[in-house]
Length: 242
Image (cartoon, rainbow, N blue to C red; front, side):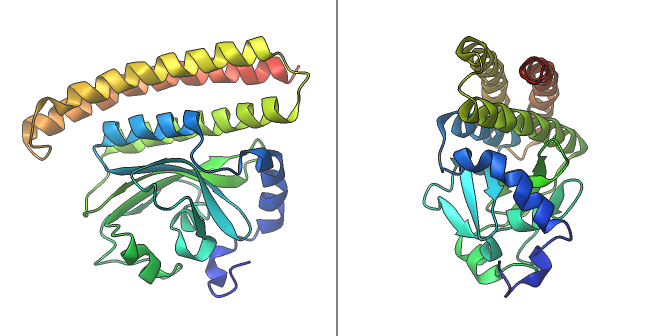
């Protein structure tokens, strides 16, 4: 346990660690499906870094990683994802230089040149926060209402994908054909979102009113896609739990 930073240990830590045990098979960095997921997320939010993390007892593993490939794992006390799993909703640090987080080792955060962080907890079926889906910028910024909603829905989809990946990895009796169909549906949805994200790059300067309008429009369309993907994921989870 990171006893140097005791504020990172939630009251339900024992339950959280128990819930993590079903995801043990996924504690590997840079998994292709999650890398694809966060790559598209980063484009939709126009940020250089996006991660799917699993927050273990001692370390944080980045199962999906774009923009921070030099870091595959981190000590729990060095990662803002350790803070995000403490909260019910999205954790946002708009300007880490001006308003640092005292719960973690800020020297490690500064070493990665992080200016902005927004992380949404990924939850197991019992509600335990086992990791995060986060977007990171090198400079300060704000998270719009549209982006908050999109990150929340993308986080729910990521939670369901984690659960499906773990279920099929842990139980070889489950239908391989079903998982292949689910993976194809996920890939199709991500491809559609990737197309929307590319359209938002119409303007060279991402800070102009026109660029922001394009980005919001793409994010709103992407929200519809991820909501449809969520329905498919729920159906797949329901079919394997029968």
